[in-house]
Amino acid sequence: MKISKLAAAAGVLLSTLLSAAWADDTSANQQDGSTTISIAGHKVPVVKGGLYDRYRSNPPLSVIEAEAPGVDLSWFKNLSKDKVDIGFESYSPNFYYQNSRVTAIFTADLDRLRELMPAEVLAKVQPLQVWPGRGLVALTAYAYHYCDNDSYNEIGLSVVTNRPGSSNLGPLSLIGQAMSDDFWGYVLKLPVNTELARVRGVVGYNLPKWLTGISYRETDKSVVVQILDSETGTVDVTLETRKLGDLSSNISMVTNSFTNVDQRGQLTTGYAISRQLSHASSTSAQAVSLGLTEGTLSTFIKSLKLGKMLKYEYVPQFQSALYSPRPL
Image (cartoon, rainbow, N blue to C red):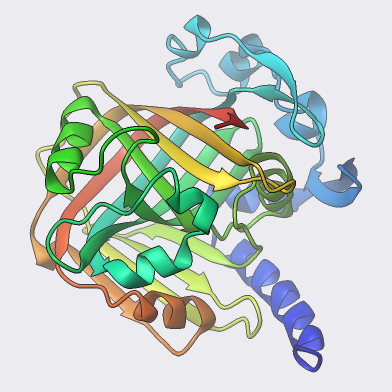
């Protein structure tokens, strides 16, 4: 890693510059002007005059209503925020007002998934085995168009697990989670394209985040996501998914929880509740194309020995509330 430190620094700089060019219009607005703030001893550039610069995760809903008059805030009006210490002063939950995502769920090598999870986590939760030797991973691309942290893109790669304290019954546990819309996982990778999201995620939520370029764009028929290698600045992973028809506008409430280890070695758990406003799903393998290279993240994904894609979720409109982690 000694000679790669200079390359890594250059790669981060290059990927940050490229992410500005690739991001959607909302993300691009972040580049109009910036200021530097301190979070837990880290110097972090944020949008000058943006939501985070002004309100540090606690903007009045009246401000959101004035700045984004087309956004339905009825759900957020029923949620209350609490001041929390998560390595820095913040408020929980963090609100995400206008967002999009696509998710592909694949089978993966069960032994490899267990190998990647810390022993203390495995003592509480295990990967769900859908058939002998095969577990599940969820690959999700998020575009947070407007949230308490301004706007950013994020890629989540997670192992699907049982709930802590519950039996691991494999497919039966998966069916139970699906029926209740209450999913559990262990996050393997979580790259983001703003330093604000990286620092808050690493320090406050104990999540494996790093900074790199992430493009989330739409064509007439598809969503195309490209992730840069943070060391080289070249395209690492490409995820292209189909825009599905027959979108449901029935509001669906989904909870996603994660278990991990904090910086003091203690087990913690956190969760996000999503209010899905427009959504559809498919089991067709033709709905998802995953392009891998020799990049760092691609190499990691290859090590999981992905198999059949079991489900694809297309969610062009959702809102979310992310709660701060607590001891497990």
